[in-house]
Image 1 (tube, helix red, strand yellow):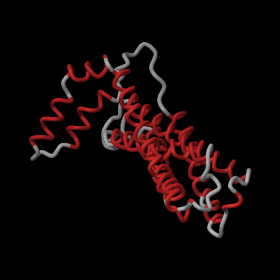
Image 2 (cartoon, rainbow, N blue to C red):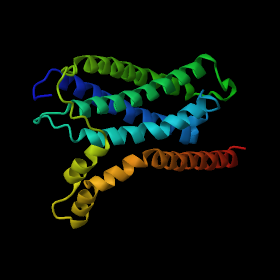
Image 3 (cartoon, helix red, strand yellow):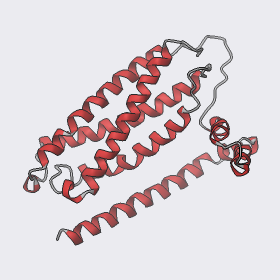
Length: 235
């Protein structure tokens, strides 16, 4: 997409709103699940509601950080490959959908009056905090729909350069590398080697599975430790 294409401002609005929503949601999820004075009166403090929040509280900031890093390559004064903006938008949309699913779960907990016996004076404020988050999330979904509709259609018969997240690792590392840092420049050069990218592509399923297992262990360990502390402090 050339500079000035009508899809670019629409995509920028969708991405910025999604990023703001993800940041606000992460703060909201942390406060309502990890701060004991807030969690004590939360309607969604118990399972199955808590399981959803625990899952998305980890993946939303992770996915948002990965998408935000790649968005650094989307420069407003330079032509933009369609595959890059399309994939960044897709990642941001998944992030927003995870937030929407969690908010829907929280609203169900409110409607079901879950853990009603533990509600306190802070519960109405916790419930009220869902309103602005829900509004931002709904707005983000609408902006994503508009941005995707404005993306240029592939030209039939034209060569599609394509690309993926791995192709953007080298230029991103070069962008972030300090000109005075030999270590960062060497790392950027290493990432840009075709052999390294081919190694990752050939073993992507194995590497992704290992990363998923490691992430799952971190989440399970952190959740178990937090619940142990919770029960010790609140018998």
